Amino acid sequence: MAEIAKQHWSAERYAKTAHFVPTLGAPVLELLAPKPGEHILDLGCGDGVLTEKIANAGATLVAVDAAPDMVAAAQARGLDARVVAGQDLNFDAVFDAVFSNAALHWMRPPEKVLTRVFRAVKPGGRFVAEMGGHNNTAAIMVALSAVLGRRGLDAHRLSPWYFPSAEAYGRKLEAAGFTIEEIHIVPRPTPLPAGLEAWLDTFAEDFLGGLSLSDRLAARAEVVELLRPVLMDESGTWIADYVRLRFRAFRLD
Ligand code: BEZ
Image 1: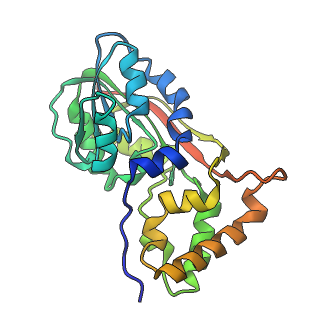
Image 2: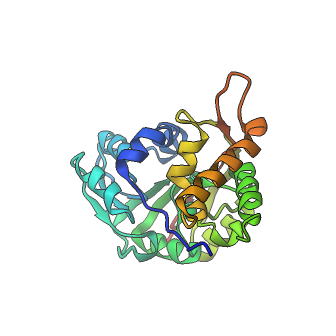
């Protein structure tokens, strides 16, 4: 019987296989539009690449992430980075803005995270974020589901991800007290420079990590072969079916 394995985060592995994540964060950074002197929280800062860009705009930053190795990498950039999960944020109306890129879909329950974010923002402040949206990595999810299903495992039960529609997440933002200025689903086919195997090793540990090493390698190979005709283009580049949910919302009172 496979055990439940938890995702673990290595800053070194992330820098090698997922450096496209902060690079592709440009649109949400533009939506944040940080101003000199603003006090901003980066929620789910990872290794701090985007946090540093926001700081370069003249804002002062606090960066938080639940993964100690990622926080250590962010601290090594000279950032004020702290090990805190989104569900455990404990700030009271201190930030002009809360920012998050490619992190909220790992944080559950979303209602608790949103309540904590709302509390952290000053009245008049904003919450600007991008996360996986409805149908994100749907082909990868179906392939994982098929391969784990053959082993008697339920990929949806193992999944750590939460990919809401704009309507569903909009309702949660409003229930937490936010007023939404904009919220959109944005399909963004995403080339995987290190390939699909490396992507699975970096991001899909909750699905495959509970298998024995030999079965994990076999299962990973099955996932790759199922997806090759769908996600590999004719030049041999893997392109994942990313779908972003991007929004800007305000705490008005
Ligand atoms: C994402 O950014 O959408 C994502 C990254 C890794 C796993 C799942 C989703």
